[in-house]
Image: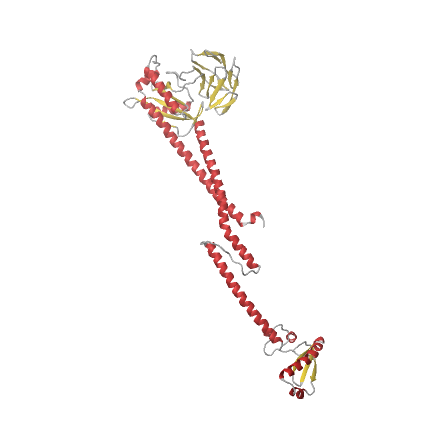
Length: 490
């Protein structure tokens, strides 16, 4: 028997495959539910945070800060500290800042910023792409793009195209090159001074807007420097992002609607989920918005953790299922094995076999019925043997009066086949032998002596007659008839 022809193997693999499919489907369903439910709760959490931050801001004070009136402003310091604490307490938020909206000229400017870096940082922003890099104390560059950190060359997506970014890690003169000709050179570390497209920018000038072409597309780019320990954006500075992001923000402000993106969207800095909390005055009028940016790296990290948890759970459950399937297969097939052995013994003619099974289920009933059948078969076999012996004795008795040779001449093998009137006709030789003075002799002998005398006589002539294919047809007191062509003993 081959390995895969065993019913135990078939049952085991059948059960395991069934449970594997069920677990896979259940795992996938649970993962989808968990992912969607988490994302929904995550959106609500982001929205709740930006709404709460926006509620703490005084709209008029926020407008004053947006105009750049921050010299010695205690409220500005307190607001900035509050933004930083919120940012630190919510590690999933990549950036947290506020903007003011001017409905007269339809513009947006930065106001408050909770993002502070420990190193001088250079921001490169345009409607087509965006990145920033930290200038470390040793002159090396650490580039941030789409929540990823790079210290070597990489590829950046822009307008559906791939834009190469080259990093030259020269501690005395490091250079960042975007595309083939947009070079940003570090001229001086302390205080930081750079050169981009021939224009020099330092911490005092803070930043410049440079004209640059990416292929045939005009790509005005803002270059800004943030000193270590200071906020990334400066109050009153123009809000820079991709066009779709700006339009979405204005749409929610004009609708005076707290909102969160239904799904992550692509910005010039990468794939981002935005949360918007409206900054309102006492009358409910909107003055701007608190914006939280969550890059998909955090979402992907959570999704990876869910996938990892589900995979581990699936593997553990599969292992348990494997063991349980094996145990169940053994539990299910043990009685079948016993019944199979019992049937094999029965097939070999062993009527003393029995299947011992202490079970109350269908297998136990089947074993009981099998044992009952064996007992009945054994009783029937015993009866059959008795009948066979009786029949054999009867046949032997008949053969003394109707010899087998006589039946074969009639074309039969058993006496029960003979019917009334059966006969054959053929030429035969008949010999009549008479014992002289048998009557006188028998009168002088006892019955037993008479039988002994006749049997002795037949015992002498019978073998000779049989040798010549004859038989004794009858033996009467006076005459014995011998026929050739038959073979018979009386």
